[in-house]
Length: 145
Image (cartoon, rainbow, N blue to C red; front, side):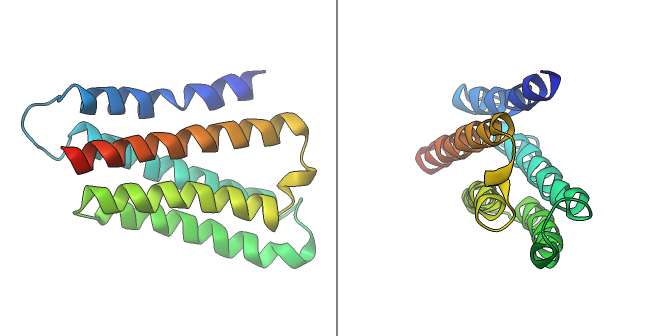
């Protein structure tokens, strides 16, 4: 299905930025370092996923979860924005990695992702796991580097 292929293709910018970071490109630090690109892309994706809570809120969530979905949607977007403003790349990486894990947990625990079709839940679980792992790898690279 197209939505699954696009979901997995969305991992490529993370992987390419991580590979470039591992290869030491570019040699001199700049605002467009691979780690900064990774963080920017991560913030955009976290905000996008948070925004899906807003879009799904109107029709799908039980009435009791609608306010949480709206607050969470805004919270995850603001977390992504805060990470972009972090001068400390390690802190931004941790914030974003935790943001992805918290978003998935929020969807599972409070917003009924468990009741979603199995293929979507599986996709979200797989993508979230890989994205969190890639954030951990970047954190190790930044800490050692």
